[in-house]
View 1 (tube, one colour):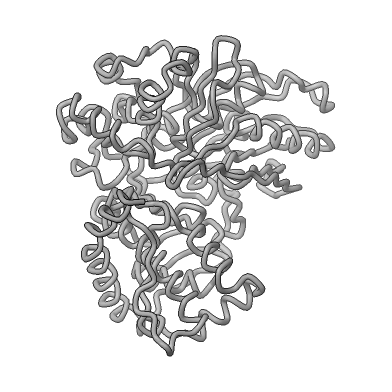
View 2 (tube, rainbow, N blue to C red):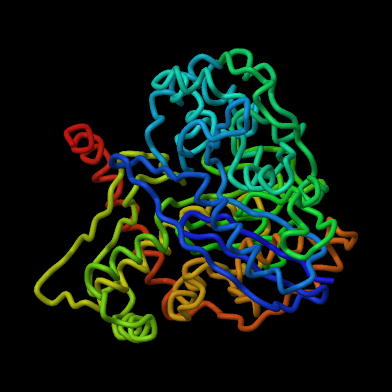
Length: 485
């Protein structure tokens, strides 16, 4: 038996064909571009996702596939009309245009603490609710056309099966779903005048959504399509993070720190997200930074475009902790945890005549790590974390992993298979085909464990303090200059 895991990411779609013992038979990628309409605005055409998925299905057709599992970027809003056609481009998770709508909705619902008590999370710019309200206010003709609201991987499931639905992990990131009761919050929807009939029914993440309508075109028969899950939850499953106390740090386009819990208590201050996991009865606390490897990619493009990743790692090793006095604020597109500041922007502070390319590159990696540490410091207050597993592109740089371990002060484990949401989606496909989570968790093997560098930890404590102080010094300036742009 073989399973196909498909992850609809921000910069690309990944597909993996995985045997029932967890071995990867093949992998496929389809690149995507993000349309930056204005500063802070991010959109994609859902048909581009579908084009990519079709390409992956064609390439996977040489294998016998039993079931397909899905993963996708969270929060991004897909709107369809009565005929199932896309109404407008999807507004993505990292889009920051909805500040006013989020503030107004929070006020209407009685303030942030009341919102958190209702749904488990505050209403943030990245979440789905603000995007719906923005279309309602700014594009009323488009809003009138909307018959179905869903998230990216649910759109792909619809295109594969003709069935509309979602599941609890992606529903958690909408801000109109009660994470504790695992239901749409009818009071919130009614108060904000959003018709609940626009929303799909909610299933378990490993439930059958339907069967692949075009199975015979690929030489298959009765291929199951499993509901799937939100990218962070599915990525966590894909590296074995799904039991209480487990912790994942993901260093991808965005950066996340996730701690699994059985608690029913959200973060009352709203600094951490509180979402359902793809497994029964468990949820997770998560902090998110908006620009992780996207900050690194920006720096590489500016100062090291001709250098290989291996050479960059060696250069970073050649610069000492503290990057010869440089501090990087990784807020290239605003920030979510812990600042929730759409106005924040990137800064390289402390440049002098002694600054080298290696210092700039290390400072960017350290700044991203400090952004992750912001989340980790909050997560470990709620979850008893003994170690962390790492995923995402940043995990390929061992010096970076050592910097993370030295800041988190726990061992960081690098899985042997580190394929993100696509591998977790294949695991969900297997569970949807009859296996259980304990069985598929045996697929996970650890390749390397990086211990904290004891000689670095005390220094990073002090440098992290300076990093936090720099943001505090600049946050009002960010707001003033953003309004002038």
